[in-house]
Image (cartoon, rainbow, N blue to C red; front, side):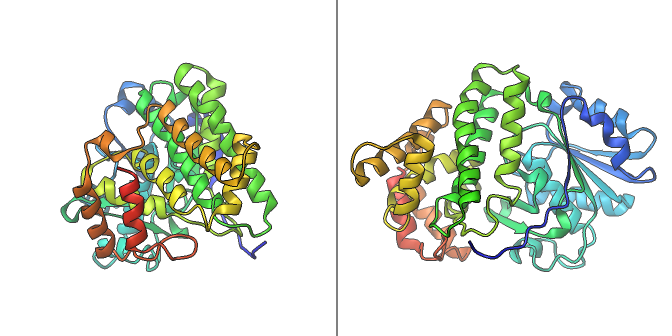
Length: 385
């Protein structure tokens, strides 16, 4: 196993009605900005519940954080936070709102052009406002990690950043808050969590059986619970298991001490920035083609994945790998998430546009071996048509 340090300061409060505990976690004298997305937080009563729990604190509501949070919208929040001297941020929503809050937290005290936070990948962040989260959608794991992805519409760029300064101080995870989500968002969340795990698991062996078995168990849980979340939308236990899997998928544990890939995500980001596809839709398109393209360097792990996750033991190595890739694609499709670019009315022109974006953003050495160049990305994209 590789050597590693693991750091995660986020306090998790999990279970029904946990939002009532907010009073114990937010400083009594805090000036709070509550960031949220559309009308669902109001319609479902979650926002009112949050406001009640915050009591007499000064609260400024900031609505409209998009499903792919944009720099342009978030800079409005930055300006207000500076003017109102906000000193605590509370994100109410899914990973997009939480990602947006992380950017605002870093940008408010930032003395340079805030876009540089993205250009530097977060390396030059020196401080940030404290953040708490109230999670309503199981998907990204942003509630328990230090990462964020932000889109700048004017540049058609979607870039990630990481910083230990933007770890949430706490996250409230009430699975019942996900009952009213549309099927599309639930399915997207399952796919997102699945691919998060795959990007940390499907690399090469480094004698890390704990991380491998942990990742495999999470994948099996998603395969089992994901369809149930769609067919039994009011089942608390199903939603609880799904929410906890999504958090564990990207809180750093399964990725500690092992190589990581992330090429599927980085190519997918460009599809979202250019064409507005849901993040999970891009992952469902790219991952099966990436698995096929990288079947030789990932051979050992692909065989392990086939046997341990999908129980594929019959046939020769080629047949087992083919079946594992096919099962992965079929799983996404069974959730209603399409896996071909043509399903989103995208053709060869989209391949060329994405390749241009990858080149412009310096994404020419992707993957765990840093050997996925533009030629390989082209083959992956064309296999995704």
